[in-house]
Length: 244
Length: 46
Image (cartoon, chains in turn purple, brown):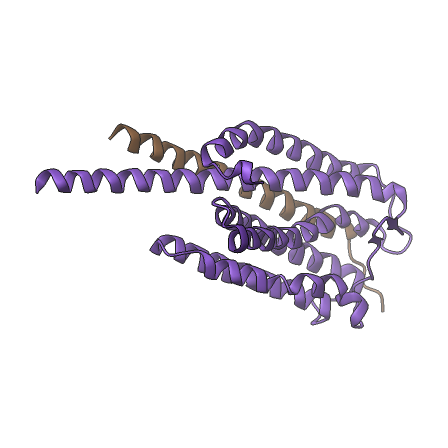
């Protein structure tokens, strides 16, 4: 991992990886969703609304995955002081928040025809909403620290503490009574019929590749901004020295 | 009493929101990257 600590080397690899990740992600995710809409039969109980599965589950996975990435990057920043860790955490925050919001919106749309309500204050939905607010807090904190030129260690601690919510989301349907169904996919096992499972797995892979591409894109943007800022500051200081 | 809801409307709404949201996220990230890299190049020339 320390091999990528050099921003120049990282940028070379990121430039090479960004387009393939975005293009393959778009093709796989949109293709799997089209497959789910046109080729998958309606479910015995949920009818046609089962097709929302192919966008809702990847969004939930990436909402939680985004915060897990922030927590891992925060740990790397605090323990190993990896120079790109804070940038990676900042870059994962906006896409993570976007997919958490999409998970909540698609879940709410799915809830209306299946549960008869748009929203219930149960463990799963509430902990997911808490995750969205944690993202907002993290984005505000890390951007203000970067703008002021201060250390990102406070944001890293926030990222680590916020990770407590991830197992709570995961276990919420087991610990508390909920309208939300219990987990259908666990370690090595699935109660989902293969006719739904395959497009779901491909959609999840596709959206995950897209997420990776977006994180690399945002890391490149943050690095380019930092390099431009540093160069302009250096030139301003040199100009000041000449005037004196 | 059972409501007569058109299930496909909910499917299209959920899929539409996700696909549009994803495209906006990708496009805004690419634009931000292009802008930042252009700014870096300009700072090199100044």
